[in-house]
Image 1: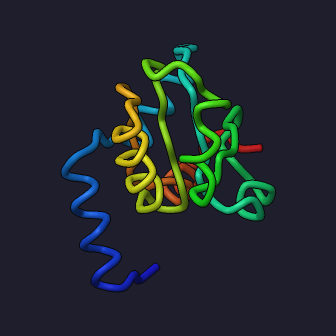
Image 2: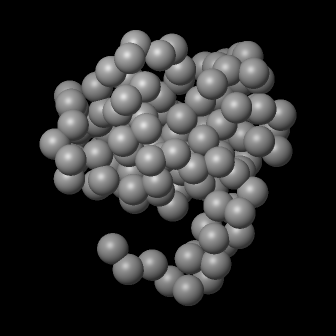
Amino acid sequence: MEHSPRFEKLCDEARAKIKEVSVDEVAARIAKGDRFELVDVREESEFAAGRIKGARHLGKGVIERDVEKAIPDAGADIVLYCGGGYRSALAAENLQRMGYRSVASMAGGWRGWKAKSLPTE
């Protein structure tokens, strides 16, 4: 998907401030049984059409409003993903600004996950 230059710039600025993890790293953590919050920040319709097995939904439009109820522990280990890693980078930056200390964005997002034929539901 091609994005506008200003959106790309905004995402690049966010990526410089956050931690990104790869699809392979997330898949390995799931396979090992690591405990962490896997959060899909895509639109509700995208989530309903398919998601990473075990992911919970907190859409980009509401994550900042709803995260404290859904994940009250600011020290929780959180991995966010979206379609390609753009929206999740923006959401990760905002969660960090809200005091969450262990937030990462999955580079490549849902498209990267599906390209590797990893488990979905």
